[in-house]
Image 1: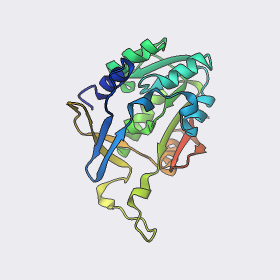
Image 2 (image 1 turned 45 degrees about the horizontal axis):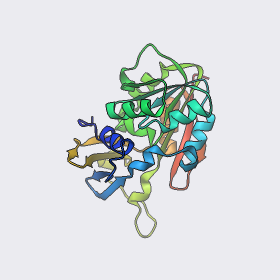
Image 3 (image 1 turned 90 degrees about the vertical axis):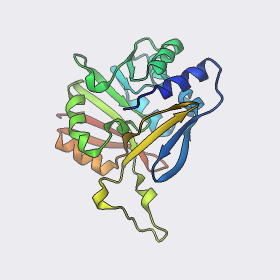
Image 4 (image 1 turned 120 degrees about the vertical axis):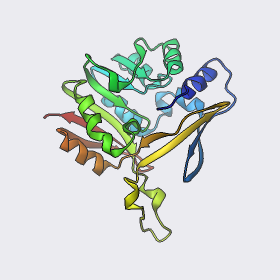
Length: 238
């Protein structure tokens, strides 16, 4: 669990015109990466095609999980005229999502969310990440199936990061004893803030489909992106 509201502080800085630097993402075995803060405020036209497709497929009452600054929720609310509940564990993100006009936004961990059901559960920006590790996926499915209305759907995106382990000759090598190759650990830095290390899961589509089927979901590959990313639709108990 991230112990400091790094996303919230960055989002607030951008909203209040104090933007001066981006979030630094560190991983043990890879070079540092960044998350550009303006990207969290992007419009529909600036979003990747897999995100646009997911937003196009959303219907009914929508739960936007990990809503960040609220860009997906705002599009669904304003352009699609859908009833959206935006949630995030970041207090700062929810503060700004509300200021930007998201009508129903709350600080909430989906794993603690109860007594509510939705037609669409939306997990975008590598939405599979919150699962953490592959061996948590049954717990994830057990939780989310309770949040779905009859004939409801889950729209989730992720990436197959096997390319990170490709050799020059095109072969693929990972240490099987180290666990599933899509299990990553990250630490975030923003200005003087630094998070604890936390788990984040990238999952290839076949592995997602197998786990979904084992938990009673029908899983469909909706769209493959250009960078080994994809968005999938899952429906429970057809």
